[in-house]
Amino acid sequence: MDGFNHKISFRVQFHEVDLLGVVNNAVYFNYFETARIEYLKAVGQFRDVNKMQPGDNFFLIARNECDYIEPALFDDEVNVYTRVGSIKNSSFTFEHLVENAKNGKVLAKGGGVMVHINSREKKSTPLPEEFYKSVKSYDTEVKVIKNGEEI
Image (cartoon, rainbow, N blue to C red):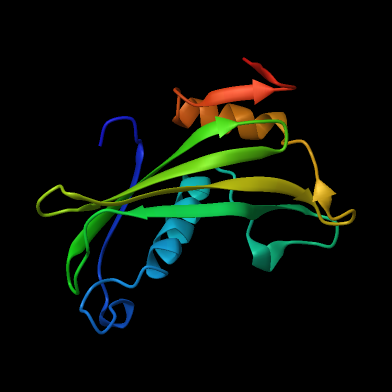
């Protein structure tokens, strides 16, 4: 998919469909979460919650949205494409595109905002330079905005 360097693929599971036989709307947020985690792993910025120490910083989702376009059905193979759209001082946006792998139809579009949190103060904290570098080397088109100015 143009503009997206990251993709995960899987089959729709039986427990993900509702009585109408389509993937339940809430399930797409699980797809997005899995895609976000795999993206962060790919750029070397995943923070393993099992290894976090008191005082470690972490990412918190502050916004999550989804536009449903076409239904996905049980056993469909789907692709979820993910990219970071923009990075600011202490937050960044994810963009997701879900497609039917067989016919290429776009099933859903979504996105969200992640905030970098200082766990001691429970407040947002600036993203480290390493984060900018890692994401920018993976997603070269990402928009970086620091202190209100696009870089």
